[in-house]
Image 1 (cartoon, rainbow, N blue to C red):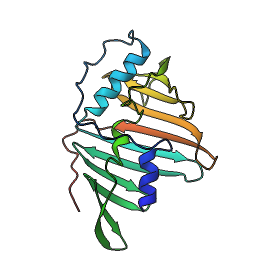
Image 2 (tube, rainbow, N blue to C red):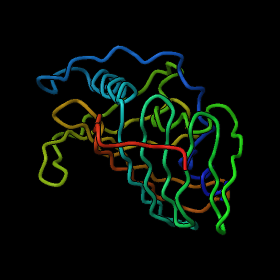
Image 3 (tube, helix red, strand yellow):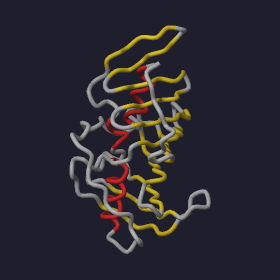
Length: 201
C-alpha cells in the first residue's frame, strides 16, 4: 500500500522537495498571455501553492498503469483514492486502512509536498518555457506551455493554464527507473472548494 502512495507522490520524477514554511503571495490573474512564458508559469504555480483546496485526477500509463485521485485541504490534509483503497494523510501521519483494520503510520516529513509544487520550482531553478498557444480543455479556454528543466534527467512537461491563471492539466512522458516508458496526466479542479473536507477516519 505504501509503495503505491510513494509512486504517486513522486509522480515518476524526483524526490519531493521540503514543504515551504509559508504560503507565497498570490499574483493577480493575468489579463492576457502577453507576459513572458516563464513568468506566466511561475505565477500560475504560485497561485496553485496558495490554493486552500484542490482535487487532482491522475492517469498513469506504463508498466504500472492506474487511475487515481488526490484531494487536498490546507494546510496538510490529503485523501488518496488508489486502486487498492482510499487512504488519508494528515500532517506526516498516514491513516492506513487495509483488510478491515486501521492503523496510524508515520511518514517521512514532506513526502507528499511535491503535490503542492508539481513542477518542482521551489529550488528557484531557471526554466525554459515554450508558449504553444491557446489550447482549450473541455470547452474551457486554456493556454498551453512546454516547461523544460535545466536538468536533462527531468522530462519536459506540458502545462495548461486557465483564464484565472491556475494550472488545469500537466502531462509528462519519459522513462521510469527501470527504463520503461510512461505517461502521466494530472487534471486539477475544485480550487478553494469549501465543500472539500478531509477528516481522520
